[in-house]
Image 1 (tube, one colour):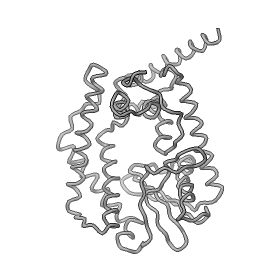
Image 2 (cartoon, rainbow, N blue to C red):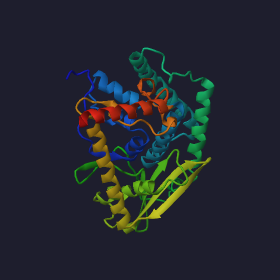
Image 3 (tube, one colour):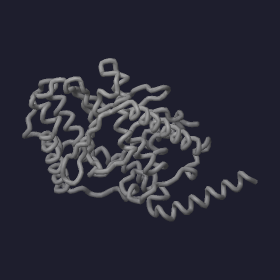
Image 4 (cartoon, rainbow, N blue to C red):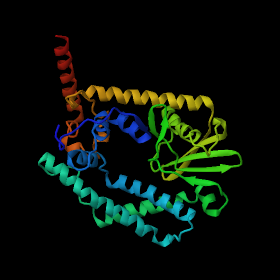
Length: 327
């Protein structure tokens, strides 16, 4: 197969919360993002970039995460941090991300031969509005625990980690690290902060959070006993930061691991459905048309224009192929 053709990657053996979320929302988008090998140059790289396309609102949320981590890193390294420059930092990040996405839109339009429905002119006024929203959320997070106590020096044993870090569990590599770890006495706190969350996330999200304990117990410098951990999730919802906390135990860690292994099995099944011909018609479309609105594949996906009609056509194709196999 030529370099510039789509190539199928190795069977999925890694797991992360974002990967799981995307698979549940739209299996086809998951396949296009993670199912094909990303090679240097060629179309595979463009496919990855298209999958990573984000709306201006999502760019604002990513900017918020980045600036918060930068602030903590600067404090840890005792580097000068000028709060009056935060709004400018945020705006520059947003503008830079929007500029980088123009190249992605050019690729999308080359593929489709028409102006992308994702191409919308973002005015300076809108950029300023997003920057101000981001700045207010940034300011409000540092009056919440544990961020406030860290900057005040009341929490002295604390660490930040990248979610890109991998942890090997059995034969799999998991992206399950927390954002912040700190100690209060003998108790170890593991926290992720989510720039947009929901008040009642359900049992699966609860177990996703418990996966941070799997990460910690595989590190040499953290407690080996599940009961010594408190798992925390700080999330933005309805105009404020909210905190969920739960003491861990062995059963929750076991259930979390089982959920992850079941997810990896589902990923492998999806991989197998594509087959050697890379037949995307075998892969289900999004469950809700809301997921299509800001998807980079919207212009070239059957569900991008009319999800309900595309789903009916796909079901008919699957039935036809199934009948041919039986014959």
